[in-house]
Image 1 (tube, rainbow, N blue to C red):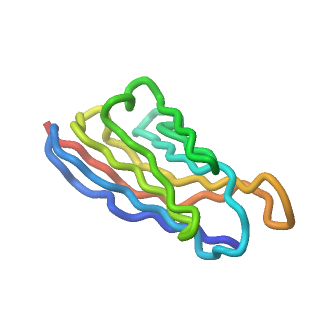
Image 2: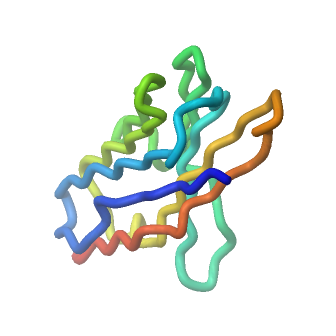
Length: 119
């Protein structure tokens, strides 16, 4: 079983920054894709950013230029650096890990961490 643990959420003023780390409880398997999603009240969960095993990243349009996703493969950790935060970034942020091959293949989710941006 793989546990996914996020941290780093909190309350920040508009224009501020937060860094969200996320780590897997085990390191003895390959994680192919790491991603951050978010879900605002009354809205569907949406992908914010993804990063492949080789380090190729993609962002939703609203995150481009403000957010940076990075990963440490040795530590099975992914980070989301969020700068120039806006009130519309307020949401619960979820970390997602995807292992595509092997006995540990699957889709793993964290419990979510609240990010609140005040105006």
